[in-house]
Amino acid sequence: MTFQINGSNGKYTNSDESTNYGRNAINNHISHLEAPFVNDNNAIPPVFKFTPTEENDAKNIAALEKYLDKNDEYLNSLPPLEYEYRYMPNLTQGNLDKNALLGAAYEELGQIEEISVKEFENNYLDDTQTAEAMDINKDGKIGLAEYSTTIVAADILSKNSTDPLKADGVINGKGLDAVLEYSKKSNLEAASKLYNNIYNTYNLGK
Image (cartoon, rainbow, N blue to C red; front, side):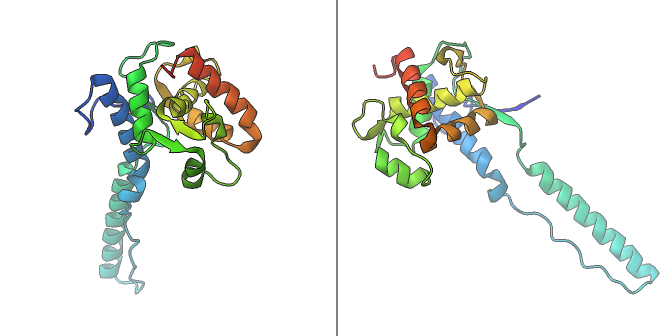
């Protein structure tokens, strides 16, 4: 069974249910990704006593067992490598919850409603990548509705599809990796076509 992160619980409670769900889903996903760094308390290997005596042998065994127990405890505390996250409260393929989507976009974009293409590229991308495909109305800026197309893209690419109607609110690692590929300058044309199709299919500009 795949481990799932969702927005059913979290710190955001002040907006409508869908917006809260979308924001909490992203916040919980970020916390999940950061967990190995926050909880990096792996045990230090013991220093054994090499003089061959019965007492030293017993101490070495005890130290090794303690280390193995601590190490198992640490490994068990790490988040699973295989997971998916759900950004909409109700899962119906092709029926997009815009409030949840825009709430997720707002949280993922750093709790702002708009960013310039140049600033986005400087903050989040490297020299091989571009954010131009997200600038759907070509005004040099990326708004929430425009940015949200990348979330839907990750959703449908998780299903090995580019059909916007395949969106169901769940994203996995495969979809996230695929969106990173679309951010490459060499894939600008394909990314622009995909994001525009998503934007128009769901009337995200309204």
